Length: 118
Image (cartoon, rainbow, N blue to C red; front, side, top):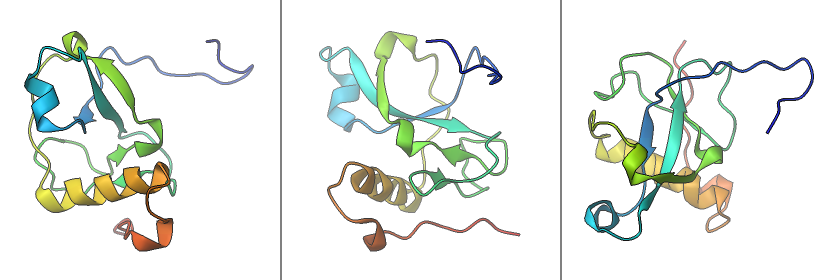
């Protein structure tokens, strides 16, 4: 899909993602896809449908990494290259709350999204 006129995009050969499919699906042969949330360290701001990850998450080396939960989507298992680390339980639970809100399962006021540190 072409980008709108005047909009450029950096192509990244690799991008860190957070796998949000249930653990049992990551090991099963079928389906051959997993649900992921892409991450970005170059976003200007965090939208209400995304989550700013704590700077001390072990799997990320950059600060101000955003889990772009608004782009929840499938990826082929074969496209994954390596396991870098696991999110802390409290970060994963916050991400799951944002995803549930994005899907309309819960309302946004029910979740607490962290504010960026100054």
